[in-house]
Each structure stands twice: as structure tokens, then as C-alpha cells.
Amino acid sequence: MVDGRKSGSLYTRYGLNPTITSLETKLAALEGAEAAWAFCSGMAAETALFLTHGRRGIVCLGDAYGGTLELLAAQLPLLGIPTHLLLGSDMSRLDDVMSRGVGLVFFETPTNPTLEIFDVHALASLAHAHGALVAIDNTFASPVNQQPLALGADLVVHSCTKYLGGHSDLTAGAMMGAKELLAPAWNWRKNLGTTIAPEIAALLARSIRTLPVRVRRQNATAQAIAEAMARHSRIAQVLYPGLPDFPGHALAKKQMSGFGGMLTIEVKGGGEAATRVADRLELFALAPSLGGVESLVTQPCTTTHHGLPPEERTRRGISDAMLRLSVGLEDTEDLIADLNQALG
Ligand SMILES: *Cc1c(COP(=O)(O)O)cnc(C)c1O
Image (cartoon, rainbow, N blue to C red; front, side):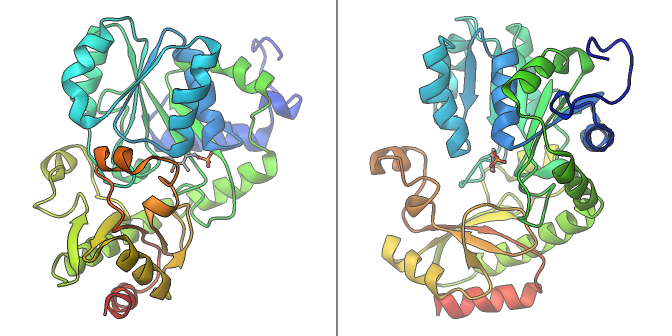
């Protein structure tokens, strides 16, 4: 069992626990993958991914989750792992960076909080031409709206804390892909001690049962809110892949089957006006995280992207007047009414 020659249950940190392996069968099926490993957090899944397949060098495209950026920019280089962070606007440098021997191309699509869309198929072809693997953090889209492996990616990671868990009551992560690519991550998970706990695995397996219904409803509500906000006189801009005039709309339509439950609105009147709107919202709770049944609002410049200098936020297209919304399962009309009263 320890060598993987015989199946069966063994010490839980090894992941050889029936509740964990049953969850992993479901996680693999969600992404159309041969196999999946479940972790105690999304960051644990990413750490295992980077240590397994990123040691020759990692390029991260576009904006990414704050913890991911910190790991890539500040911590993996301490271990001698070369990392390169390229924004969408720096894509002309990608070929040059790749030719320096990068082993892993990593990105999120849509990104946080500007919902930038990256072309999974095109970037996978480019990476493969350079002998590199492609891994996607599919947390924002969820497997219901986007299937990166079918689009040509090699690996997918998730923060299951978000849509897969869906109720803001658990922390977990996952990595999905071919058995051959997952096998070397097993020892990292085992020895870093980042296996999911069986109790959390059971809770996550139960949550996944309602994932498609939740996400489809969240897609529809987010679309309705985006359309209502796009018409609102106090809104300067709405970033949502489902809006026809959104820059990434055509690409999103090509590679996604739904546009997701995340959107960003930019309030007229600057950062303080946006803070006042966030404070006045009643149904949207002011809190980080996303993907749960309750709608949430965050102001990126005071929360998720607070650590960045203002010039860096500007370079990333993040203005102080932006509010990021995670749409939950409340009544659509109630959510729109709440935004209207807060803006009014
Ligand atoms: C939350 C999040 C993570 C980190 O996940 P944890 O479960 O909190 O470790 C990674 N990527 C994205 C896109 C996230 O939203």
C-alpha cells in the first residue's frame, strides 16, 4: 500500500482513506481528469503544484490570488525556483521568458478582480511548443463554467473553499490532471502534511452535489446584476464577461459555458464613494472570500489588493472605486434593489 502496489486504507496523511479517495473520484470527474488529489487548502494544492512541476521555472500570467502572488514573488525564489510575473499587457515578452527554460505556465481565467480572460487553448499550444506544462487555477469559473483540461491545459487547481464548498464553511483545495502528472505530487502532499481531513472531505463531497444548480443560478443572477449596473447612472464601468461590450466577452463565449458569479463594478466619485456604497449594502456582506450561497462585496484597494502600492494597482487596472461582488443565491430582484438603495 505504501508503495502504491496494493490498494487499501492506511494512515490518513497519506490520503489512503476511503472518504478522501471517494471525494477525489468526484473531483476528477468534475474536471474530466484521470485523477485528483484533495488538499487542506487551495494554497496547499498550489504549493504542491509548484514544487512538483515548477522547479525549472514558473511564469504566472495576469493577476492572481494574493497568496499565490506572494508565494511566487517572495517565497519560491528563496528555494532557488525562478519565477516570472507577466501581466496581460506584457504578453509580448512571453516568448522571450519561455525561451529561458520555464517548465510551468500558470494563470487564472477569469482573473481577480478585473475578470480578464486568457485564451487557454492558445497559451497551452505556446507552452507545449516550449516543452512546458500549463496549469490553470479554475476557482473563479468553477468546473461548471469552464473545463481547462478539455481546452488543452495539463493541470487544474482549485480553492475548494469557494464554489466547490459553496457555503463558506470549509477550507480545502484540489489538483486534477493525468495520473502521470499527479503521481509525483503525492509525496509532496504526504510529507508537507497538506492532505485534506476526512471530515472536511465528507462536507465537500456533500456540497459538490449541488454545485451545478448553485453555479447556474449564480451565473444568471450575476448576468442580471451586470446588466442593471451597466445602465445605472452612478456606475462608471461594469466588468463582467457576460456583457457583450466587455473586452474578453468573445473569448469567454468561446471557452466558457457560463460567465460565472463574480463581477466588478466601478462607482462614480472615487474610492470614498465606493466605500460608502459598500458600507450601505445590506444583503451583500462586506467580507473577502467568494463562491458561497451568501452574496459578498469587497473593495479590492482596501482588502485583497491593499498590500500593493497605488501605482502597482493602477498598472493592474484596479481602481480605488472598484467593488467586487460575489453573487450568492438570494433573490435577484432583492440583490439589485440592495445595490440601487446603496448607490442612491
Ligand atoms: C481563495 C483562492 C485561493 C486560495 O485558496 P485557499 O483555499 O484560501 O487556500 C487560490 N486561488 C484563488 C483564485 C482563490 O480565490
